[in-house]
Image 1: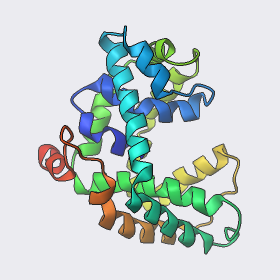
Image 2: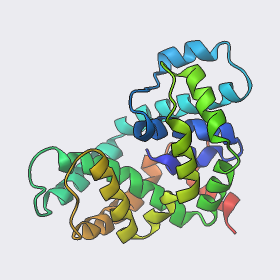
Image 3: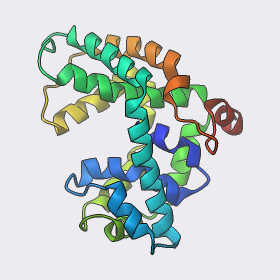
Image 4: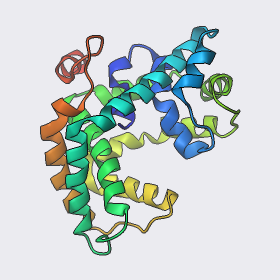
Amino acid sequence: MNYLSHGYRFLDDPMFLAGTAVPDWLSVADRGVRMRSKSLLVKLENASGEVLQLGKGILQHLEDDQTFHEKESFIILSSQLGRLFRELPGLNDGFRPGFLGHIVTELLLDRVLMLRTPGLIEHYYDQMLQLDPHVIQSCVNLLGPRETENLAWFVEIFQKERFLEDYLQFDRLLFRLNQVMKRVRLTELPSQTIGVLEAGYELVEAAAPELLINDSVEATIQTVSYRYAG
């Protein structure tokens, strides 16, 4: 799951919302800091206030990722997108098609949420802007396996660049995807990738009700659409 799919259900609690983003922020800002549910639960026993809420959001992220990646619909979709990527020039071997099928399914699910839910992405960023990046970093340093000095700057970039909104345009989504490719030291994707993104979106949109996590304490996409429309 990507940022919006993790957080769209928790927009009434900015620190919890931030927690749902922390593992993905760290994967960019400081890959050496990995949050683990078992050790996090121990530290949360004596936590309170903002630290507790942030920690609960991190746990939510970890639990949701495990559930999401085990869904049959996700496994099928990521394989379908992987096959589409394999047909692109220079992508017919290696692990890249599978890697791309996985992450693009997640990015396109965020796009589904934005297009089905007018005002949702604006509200998401409004809540994110309430957060102090240095407070978030301090809380993470109390909860993580070691301290980081690299998180606050990336949270600031996340707040300012609003790159999730780029998913609404396929050419901008390709630009952001190529940033990921560069970060993981893989070859840049060709312009033909836009066709794969367009076809993949149709597949992900159709499967969205099965992909999104909605249990008894979480809003369905229909409820969220009603709540934030207009």
